[in-house]
Image (cartoon, rainbow, N blue to C red):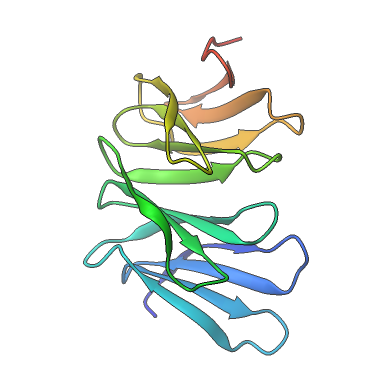
Length: 160
């Protein structure tokens, strides 16, 4: 694997996922260090962001190919078709409840998608969003962008 840009640990601590500049997303056994899955859907691109779903059954990845991929850890393949975005995807985060995925990037601001149906729920077209986090109750998404932090209502997109 090339340079690893982001890692995440499954909630049970048994797996680690990595996103790399060679376009691969890899799931590793945290105890043995052995590779469990190599997901290849971002060919020729850099994977900037990876995260396990709260139940650790899926991994979301975002890259400079302008897509978010959602992978099944159980089957070793895609959970559904890639989500097409307007620009590079720099951050992908599951809501604590696991029902939604927030993504942010260089163009297109912040978007929220249904994690099960691959349906877009909310899109805020503003400036680039470089990092995201959810509140524990999943009611708000916090985004870092252009020297400021914005907190959005995750249901209607209104900033606080």
